Length: 633
Image (cartoon, rainbow, N blue to C red; front, side):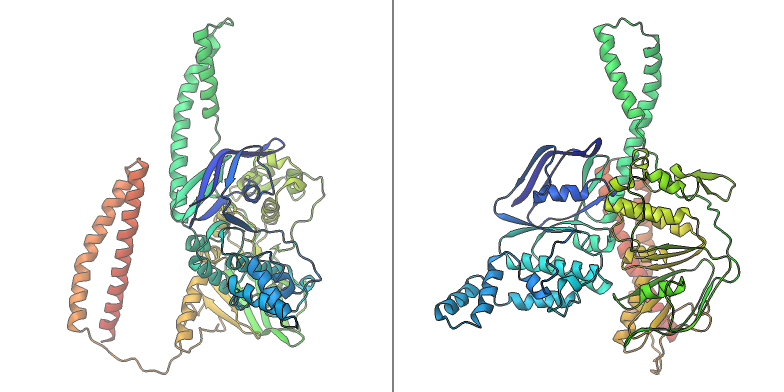
């Protein structure tokens, strides 16, 4: 069943064209993610589908038998309503039946009571209230009597998300669910619950997200919006990256050919007399078409730069026996930690556990109840908070950055101009000379991030930096941070981002307890899951954090020595025979990929490579398990 069809959509704001003549279809059961740089028109496209914006040209046809439901960044609500009352403002027949039923509980009108009960049966509303409360509970919203006006921004987003999910369950019509950054303000447990919920739900989904693990778990189609066009990729995020690389390589090859032709035609143009024949005019038109291709700018300025970071002394940052509470809520209890030069620490935990409070204590914005903090004299903090950017309304992007410095120093004695650094973070020349007030919300976040980095700090502190950042910007930021030689603290719920950057995890587990784990976020989660299953605790930090390089499990159960059974011995022999064969097949596929240019063949070879690599990995893991048994024997 076709839900949405769009043909030749174009949308501009002033001289800025967001997209031009794009066409697409959404069919029942599709789960689509939209990937694009902020300011490319993602949110505008969603609003056009919702009927909140009108395209400059083109047509959108939405099937009359479906409802379109939007989870937006901007949420309208009456601050005087309780959470329960807000949830019941849903405009659907099952919700109306539920409201009538609640009224009937306090009524003596038998006709009204019978009608309410009949409505509950007709609209299958009996389980709806229970399901609504389950969704709210999973999103950590338990006090349904709390007024909407008293909630934090994150809580409001979670209540709105619960309302939207309830709406999709309440309506028994076909539903297109549109979600704009649904994982913002959700902790990891909530994100994983939402992944599972959306995977099981029989819905059609159009999603904008920066969370790549979430994207891969939920969606199987990616729409890429770039250079005013829309490209469709069937498959995972990795498939999208591969297709994008192939397209860019093909474009660069086309540009190279156009450049060669352009040079020849340019000489011909210069030799031509002013009086043109019809034949020469046709060639002139072709020349200008060639010129347009030849001058296409596909340069992607990389981050392979040798940054000249401000010097770090021997003393970095040390926290000694820190306590912090708010009333009866204990956030930090006897917490000590010594940060090392170049260390990249991730801080994880549930919302409200005290992560942001720790960041504030480190920087002196907030006082600890007890304990001592020693900060090195050479430390220059760069703090990216959730508060947003402060700027003058009419100030231009380039002028805002130049207030810090005209140039950014490189270690080789050279430097980047403010404009070059802006381009590095995906601000084109036109945007650089635009007022900051004209930027989208995501572009302002990107500018705020760039403003912090441009100050050249040697100790970076990031509090949820990935919220509202687009995937291209996240890739740039990840590359920058991987090369950053100073110290780094990141608070984030973005699992993919944390896994790429951090090498050490501090986990807030409630009641002031902070666990120290050497490894990235996924490694910590895996170790904790295994140890929780065994009823043991994850390793706690020693006096010298660098000496505790692996998680340890304290167990009193003696190790039972084993030998390989006959079946295991045969299995080991088979694996040792098959592994070299798989490695040889893998090498052949890689060789074919390096010499192949046909897209369909590349796609097939890539699928074969993934299959072989997966088999090889399984064999290697089993071989290691069998070798461990042999070693124990």
